[in-house]
Length: 175
Image (cartoon, rainbow, N blue to C red):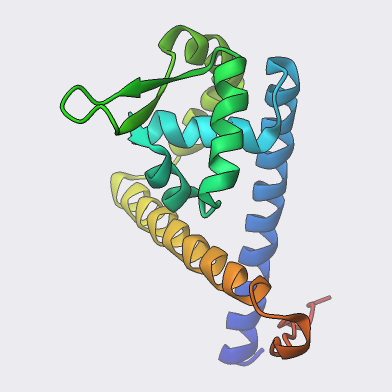
């Protein structure tokens, strides 16, 4: 097999593995969201809030790629479920932050223990150098997905008749 074909096959395997992992992660999150009684997208926003810390709705919109209007709906639903709260800035009362309610986050977090344990087992098989490479991949992948989200939003904001024709790139499958 030529070097180019071997690389294409490797890239296809990596893409397939990432798609499987992503899909399974979404399904896992959907199960947790169902137990929590909220939408999966709301749960993902709550997770981002947990990772980001106390942020404004504008910042949450920025890191999720959602509109500020959509974020308002997400925050309203999460607040109604008792999972987040709005907090006014003490210096500028016009500014409002969104914060996760810690006790509520811990109740939902318990459902991620099996995932955490499984991933700790996987990570245990890698050297520190390999973990640094995986971390770099994950961080750069996140930036790539953010850029793709912006590109998709821009595409969807374009009238259908003016959108460029997009063609999904596929690699030939190896037997």
